[in-house]
Length: 241
Image (cartoon, rainbow, N blue to C red; front, side):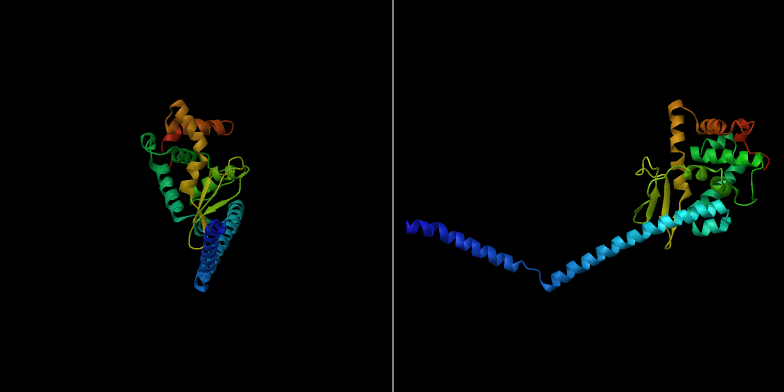
């Protein structure tokens, strides 16, 4: 009987002793504790920086809307609120509005055709408040594309590394505006934002098998038929530049 007990108890004691020794040996060394602490500090710093960038984006957006509302200069908008690609895109688009005929418009995306036709409508109806940076004014003005969009109920702003975004409250995970972290400040990327704003309209062309210019004319007529006349093919050609 005692022999049987020894056969059972001795292995158990051996296993327990080895287990305790293993646990004692697994205790973290000072060097390992330092590494762990450094990793935790870095994670905390990353989290803090992300929160700072989130707050900076929210503040930038509020300042940007106020700047547009109070009519700050184009130079201020370009320097503090818009990416360099935005300025290049707006300049290129304004040039297209002055020279592209109907055939050339077929090489453009819908949001570009829409912007070009709207630019020509502004020109014909003498809606400009400035002789310079007209395309910028048209997109950001009180009745412009971006201004009308920001009157909608927006969701929370989101930050991922050096990219920021915001969507509608009803679909906050679907970005509608894109921001970039540029030299310690956030700036709005218009070439990426405008097509997101017009994406819902663009789906109509797919359903009806329309060209981009036909859809652009249709939508402008739908929006402004009670305000302006001759919302027709005459806007597909350069007018009086």
